[in-house]
Length: 254
Image (cartoon, rainbow, N blue to C red; front, side, top):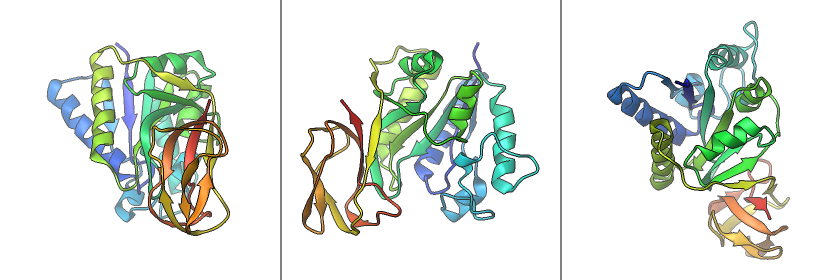
């Protein structure tokens, strides 16, 4: 029987992931599923402060793997977690989407590796997105040593209950061995931003398809248009936009 590790709370401001993990742990313990472990609060200091980075060293934990037992607080957490994760057959890291953003639930992993693609096929999440991006993320470092692993993104910083429940139910189905629905694979995605700051009003929703030139939203009343053909997987929600901190949309390209 394969051993599965589910983690959450890597980023302390993504409380929705912590909620899913806590609820899953209660369900797993209730039915006595002994091959699955859940760590809902990987980065407790960051969660307590509601910060993406650990307040003790200012580092993004998901840029610290495989870690260093003699390093800073975040590097030590990463090293201890990575050492534990290597003992599992599959690893799922739960996240909620971006600052002041919202997304459709999707899986993020290195799809060039067949074992990750197969992992996605077994999960009841409708979309899988390729990334081999920023190094020192747990799922990428585990993939490098042959362990199927992924991030699941859902909801937003202002968590959305329906999207959280969709992911929680999909994980229950996966862990119970129920067949998932068909997964749609995307080989690339683009995070779109503009240099101008101001008040932004989105005109699209996550999951909508767009063509190049379609209006994504209004920034200070001016139209912001899609640079590509594709499907919107994440958006900036209505409010003040700061290009130093946020993207306006994430689009998987057709």
